[in-house]
Figure 1 (cartoon, rainbow, N blue to C red):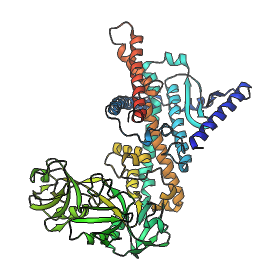
Figure 2: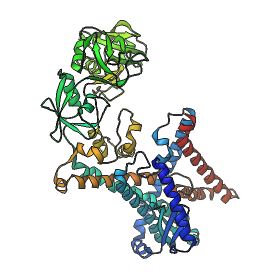
Figure 3: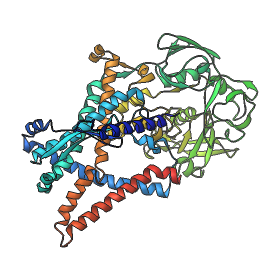
Figure 4: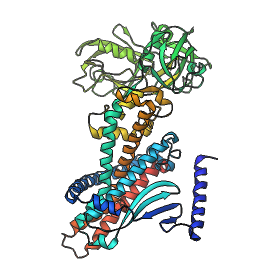
Length: 607
């Protein structure tokens, strides 16, 4: 029985038990039940709100600022939802995990992207968001002299899903339009303030105390790979290879490429040593690779020979193809394929290869040599272009549809063409080929002829990348940082080249980080817990604030839309002002509902 079915049975059992207790008058008057929803009402706290509301001018000034921010976000949200819905209708994307119903819920263990291991941190963040949101509504009620009937918490079974403040209807009606608008905007304003505070602490003292531990972080190992056979798996950190220190994942890749030993000793972070019998495992194959196809190489194949010579390491593969631009590759399962061996590239429009050598834009080319430099993979091509200057004419040998061709290319300037240095990250699908100042004008796939191989068979965890995103170092703007933090829990959906999401410092990934500086006295677990609470508190407050800014009733955005529409319609020379206001707000609200449904279910239904 799957988890979702157990949850449904639990909800039904709770609903039946709560209804039985309510029908027999066994529940206190402050507790009200409606299906699986339970609300707890209280009048306590009103005196505290009265005291806090004393500096009315201050609260009104903050609320007015919040109204402005909310209006801007409402307009942006309206346009964004419509644009996304139209995009889904015109070009339905492939369904992803985000489109499944359970992943809309902020419930750890039910939502695939919210693990149970951070359930306490998520619940803490949710409680803070709800209490602050509704508390701000209550505070502005008293600032604007709006009476409060009751306040309390809303629970879905036993899980807090909301807090509420019930203003007196008559008092609310008598309040001015500006007073009501400030009260409606108070909740999202408070949530945004919590976001600023939580992320300021996370970006500052907490995040600054966390650093990436030395070594190559292992997110996992391919089934049947040399690493898996040697007992290397998730949470391990490789700190040495053959007795030589390993700084990070890039350093591990470099050392594996340079090491020709068929058997190596790997040292893990806990001092354990593993002996690995290496073999060339195929870890990625580009669709346009000449080595791909029904009769070609596939992920998890193991390369046995090249031109009849046994190969078990990256160095052996490079040596086997050093002199021949075309090679025959055979795998352990008997697959044999003959193809050119080089850097698989796609020609970009108006680049030097397109403009000066007349190679059609979009053409797939396997580049095997630049001048006298043999090119086996992307790194070779980058180095060959790096060694040359813009304006230099170089012969480039490439294969198009299996036929050998030689092109005379006048290199361009990467600065003039808007290029940037090509990285050596083997996890990238492709990257613009612009090494140093010289520019060739291609996009190049990872690996050898678009095939990535690994003689160890581990998948790296992007520890440094996630830490830079979490601490604000990955973006130059605060809004950019907020966007990156928003997608962290499901980052593998946003960037398919990354296999792991980030839900905080939890599980096996805690082995990849360490606490330094004064906060190290508290111990790693305490600092990691604090960082997780701040991350999820900021994340949930941000989602709640943006969601409530959707201009649809009964959300705060819908209520603000009504008061704003009333203000505009009141100045129009029409008689049926209430009807016109209702028509506008209802139309906008229905549009938002339809857009949300299309975005959520469109990829599944139309894809």
